[in-house]
Length: 93
Image 1 (cartoon, rainbow, N blue to C red):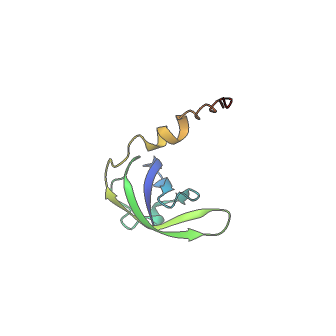
Image 2 (spheres, rainbow, N blue to C red):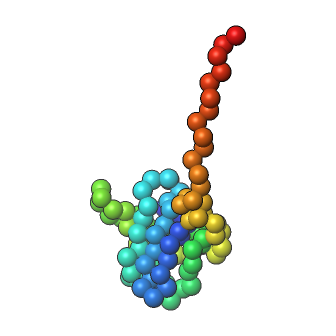
Image 3 (cartoon, one colour):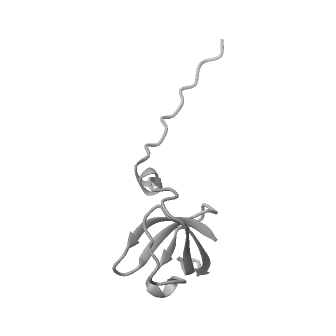
């Protein structure tokens, strides 16, 4: 699976990933989830990982950064983008 990191804690190596299948978010719970626990990572990085977990939570395993700074504004866009206003219907003439 591939996706973009939308939240990351450098101290604990926890991450939340928006998956490219547009399914539920996936979670890297600690440094053990990373292929290289010392590799640099940040919000907006494009990553590859093995998807695990059950019905309730998707998890990341063997997470690795493929491209840094790929989508730095994605988290803000997902959080803050206003919903489009409903379109007004016109009466038929």
